Length: 282
Image (cartoon, rainbow, N blue to C red; front, top):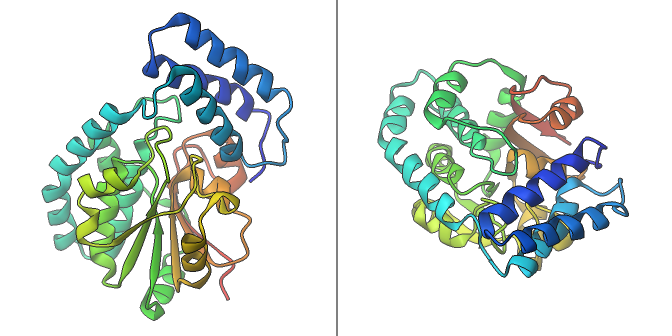
């Protein structure tokens, strides 16, 4: 997905928000905004937004000298999500369609997005999404591909969300490889976060190699690329992964909540809609 003009003020907001979390040094925060502002003047609009985000968050790490500004926030998000896990498992087990309920729960976790300047209440969002109609609903195609799949590659997004991904992975009933970011970026999931969520108990954990807030294939390592090319089913969670992979040539199922107008417009849905979208099905 290309960069739109509406993305530019969002880049600045993200830079300010992350710098403010990383440090209370006003000079460093001002330096972040100055550097990012200068950089944005020359960004290629044909690039995906996460490719620009990759550079922005690298600059923030360099200037603030803080490697993982969201570390404590991620821990709190995971703790809250784990506290909901037993109740959510019961909802899946009692559901008339456990797989669909697990998908809804996984998408509900997508609201824990600190790259988007919005407040969220995970309990309230869960209640809404468990009843909400899908704006795009390629469920039958998903079930067909799942039934025939021997290997599944699941692309994680944010750290707290990974607890809800675990519920879906447990329902898939197939071997799953769960891919996370190479290094901390926003509140996205890295290996340590996935282990804290208990995902190592239900999936093989790997790093995609991407240092961006998304799966950007040009940044990914060879191991991930091999799995991405050869997996029978690829599940992509979240807006960032959609931005990074919406133009790929292989089949992918995107699961997300459209939390910004740019994503909503690109998908031809409304803001806050939930989506289960497939591309490149044979």
